[in-house]
Length: 331
Ligand code: CAA
Image 1 (cartoon, rainbow, N blue to C red):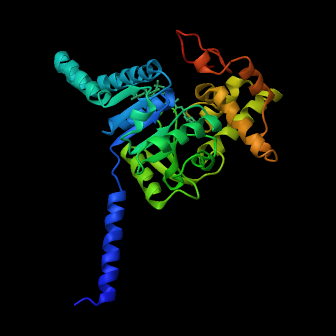
Image 2: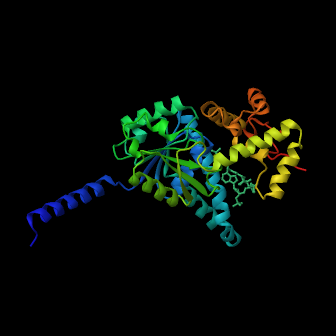
Image 3: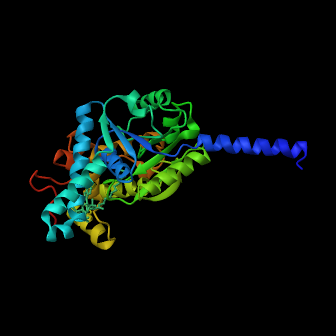
């Protein structure tokens, strides 16, 4: 027989377990804000993992454009997936490709309506412009309209997740989910935990990262987390070498590709990520940490950005990208 005291503690333990089980909503519905290259990539891997996805942007045209990009990516993958079948039956392969694309893209809904997009969300992932005020404004609205249990995550690459979370009344359910470009190809996601992120939120974000077939690493809310803290100074050092005339851009890139086995040289990577993005990261860090020399701005980078030479997306950065030949000519 249980004593009154042990009965009371058993009841307490049971009710706290029940409360915990109730509080733990499995993630089924994922809402992504920002239908650009990163947001669309996150939407793609989420839909491929079986989640119901809402992809939100400021206009329905922008959100639809994101879905169109996903459709062509998934169609390319489907052609590879059913290439063997196509050798024996082109018709069956085409039908399988169509069903595969429909199943994945059918799970994604494009919208520009914030309230309805988050009404049933279990996880919201923000991948919008890297501007703290704009992000805080969005998180304030998400906090007001998303269900209480929903986790709010940011894909920020350079801002403090803590500052973004400060706009909400659920700091324990806010964290960073930092994906890499191009999202469907790059295998990593960084799971960023602030001092306020709860253990349950951290665990849910880790599970989500694994469910979208990424390798997960956990990190604190420090500038650039792990990858960008190493990668951005590397790019900056490469730009400084170019500024000093130590080597040509082609030789700097070739050196890191063939001497360090990087898939792209640092200047080519800057063009790929976007020089505007690199510039805004470094400007932000420099303002916050003026004594860290590695974060010093580069006059050449500032010049290219002021000339709107952002890299691949504008057709010119360190290299020129003619529309018909998107890859730079290499030596
Ligand atoms: N979406 C989906 N798939 C894509 C893709 C995209 N946008 N771009 C390329 N792919 C796929 C291709 O279909 C191809 O798939 P298969 O191997 O199955 O055929 C594969 O990727 C390789 O593509 P390509 O042959 O066209 O080109 P590549 O071999 O030169 O690889 C690359 C392209 C994957 C981008 C490679 O150059 C690379 O890994 N570069 C480094 C990328 C990197 O470092 N990213 C991180 C940037 S930092 C960041 O993102 C953080 C931040 O916050 C700024």
